[in-house]
Image 1 (spheres, rainbow, N blue to C red):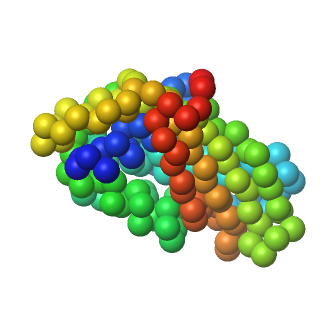
Image 2 (cartoon, rainbow, N blue to C red; image 1 turned 180 degrees about the vertical axis):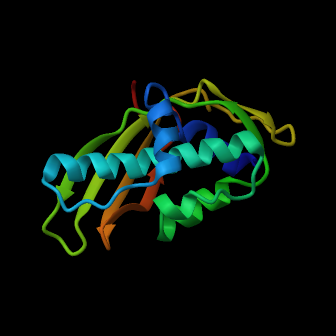
Length: 168
């Protein structure tokens, strides 16, 4: 990945213990949910983890896109994650610790905000054209706005802070 993309991907996405469950989620896709709050929160977290797993998987392949991105994301979040995958190859996986910080299940559409402090220290770029990614091994905050439409939860907005701006 180019510097901006590589920095976003390496520092932003981290799949520690959630890695295996996120990868499984990317294969199955989010399930429709009109359930009570705990189920809605779980679906929103699954959408976020699934999106991150698709980016990581794509980075392992040196992909320019990944078919699961559109399953887990839309709008700005889809555009951002598609831009990240620019053929750069990475290995390993970053660590995620997402948590629900806000929810409006009565909204139109229902919305859940997920925050994370991602650790990219175990996710290394193998081929990025030789550009350094300063501070990419420091934790980085992320915020995802996840909405439910037509029974499916998808990340609509995705934001990343500076490396080192959160503590794990």
